[in-house]
Each structure stands twice: as C-alpha cells, then as structure tokens.
Image (cartoon, rainbow, N blue to C red; front, side, top):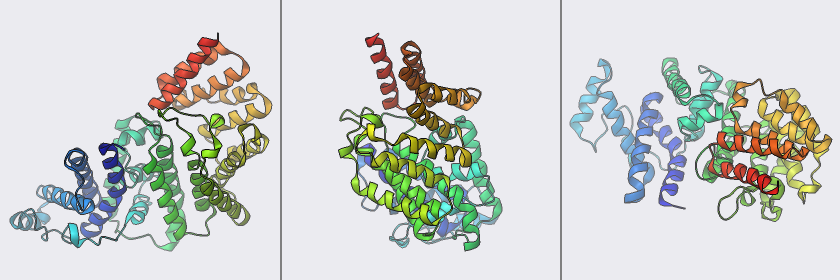
Length: 419
C-alpha cells in the first residue's frame, strides 16, 4: 500500500470519530463537519510527505478545533466573547471554546461513530439527504462519489448535503442516540447508507482500483455495531450476511495486475470460507425468525452463489425465484438488471433482454454503464457478436472505474478478434 493510500484509509476510519468528538464537545454539527473536512484535507496533503503523527486522532481534533475558532470569529455577536477569549489564549490553549480541550483531553477510547450515524439519519432530513450526509460524515465518501451512487450531478448532491446540515442546525438536534421508540424509523435509512458504503468499497465508482477494501470493512464494522444494538432485527442480520457473503469473494475478484475477474471465472478456493460460513448462518437464522425483507433476500441470493462449488453448479432457478420475490417487494432498476441475468441463465438470453427493454425509458439507467454491459453480455449469449461488441464499447465509455473500463474494452476486443 502506498503512503497516500495508507493515509486515505486512516482518514476514512478516523473521520467519523473526530466528527463525533467535536460535536460532543462543541455542538454545531454543520460547523464541526466543515472543520473536520478541512482538517482531513490538511492531513491528506501533509501526512504522506511528513509522516503520520503519533496521535493522528488528536492531531485531527486539534486542527479541526482551530478551524472552529476561525469560523467563530466571523459568527454572530453572541459568540464574540468566546472568540475573543480563544484568540487571546493562543493556538494551544483552546479552553475558551464551548467544549473540552482538543487532543489528549478527548477520551482516546471513545468512538461516537454510531451516534453520528443516527444523527445523520434524523427525521428532520429527507431520506435522500439522510443517506447523502451520512455517506459523507460517516463513510468518508466525497461528494462526487455520493452523486455517482445516486445518479445525479455533483452540484445537485453538494446542495443536498449543505441543506441537510442546515436542517440539523435548525432542528436543534442534540448529540445523543435516539430514544428506543425512534430507532425503527431511522433504521431503514441507516441500513441503506451502510449498503451504499459497502458497495462503494466493494466496487469503487471511480479511480484506478476496483475495490476500496477499508471502506467495505468499515461498512461491515458499522453494521456489526448496529446488530449489537438491534440483535433481533432480521434486516440488520440480512444486511450483515449480504456484506459477508459478498466480501468473501474479494480475494478472487482481481488478478495480480488489478484487472477484474467476473464471478463465473473466479477461483473459488480463494474465497473466505469463514465469512461464507458466518453469512450463511446469519441469513439462515434471520429467515427462520423474522419477517422477510429485501436485504434478507439479497443475502439468500449471495448464499446460493457462494455455496456452489463451481460456477456451473449454481442453482439459477432458485436465484431467479428469489429475484422475482425481490422485484415484487423492493423492485428497482438494479434489481431488474440482476433479475434479467438470472432469467437469461434459466430461460435463455432473450428472456433477459425482454426484461431489460423496460429500463430504456429510465433516463438515469440509460446513462449508466451497467445497463449497457448487461445487455452486451446477453447479446453475446444470444450470438449477436456485433451488437454485443458495440454494447461493451458503449459501457466502457460510460464507466468511471478504470478496472471496469478495461474489462469491458477487453470483452469488446475479444469479440473483434474472434470475428
């Protein structure tokens, strides 16, 4: 791992912890989030060249707290005395602020990540804003990455995040875990956030690497924290099972040069048997005791894939039946894409192509590379090599992940070579 990558992974892990420490000490979520982002930017530019400090968490808290001093200097009149006292104290004596001294006086073993997570999912925010803000504050994703996940322009997402922080300020939300009665209402958004964070880690939307391993691990860690809070919830268990069963394949997804290996071609001996065993146990228990939900169904699909010793042993009829259930209870375009593949494997490629036809009217999907990639795959199965090649090339142009681009270009090149 390069120094830059090591720093990025560490900052992603520390970001919600630092934000939690500042909000707990000072309040003002929006101002603290801005200050933490500035501290993260400073660390990202300095640490690769100068080395990671001995106490990176304390370093970030100190720098972010100093940024708060700068912000408060231009704030409303009711803060002027605090600012004057802080400015007179000097940069290393920040007791004039509204919370504890930064650095060592913040408890070293306190991790407020889960509290930040539920704060970002406050009912004062719209569902989309809840997801976007949590991805930024807890997941460490950039605004561009979040925009890609939602299939919207980056400027639109930046406005949503800004409005979300303003809404939290206006609602006067305290930095505490929500009462038990409110937990179910926030849980759906929390789970969706964790799902998106994991997906970004498992298949990065952009950049030179297919995977961001630490981001996927962080999503798993946070989901484990939620399941400790709500051990009887079937969908929490289903999401954790889905993550484990999916992440178990990670070692086989790339070749030594970083290129993508599709599921059907992976060396299944490289899959993590322990993660598969834990995931299968989790989903089996959840299906036996809890009402059926979309994460449980997706985990069940992942389990069918993982339990097949070879790709040709996959129980596609069972997977197709599960996707049909998933379409009925929680259908969306991405579900339809996967449903189409399962239908093609059971009933032939035309059945899958017929399902894809309904997505052409969706402008968001028409711009998404995966629609064109799946269609190209099914056209290749059907023997229409020219149309498949054109589809792969179009998908490669739409993809923003370099490994995915190279894989799609490679599929197109193979079809051209065999012509």
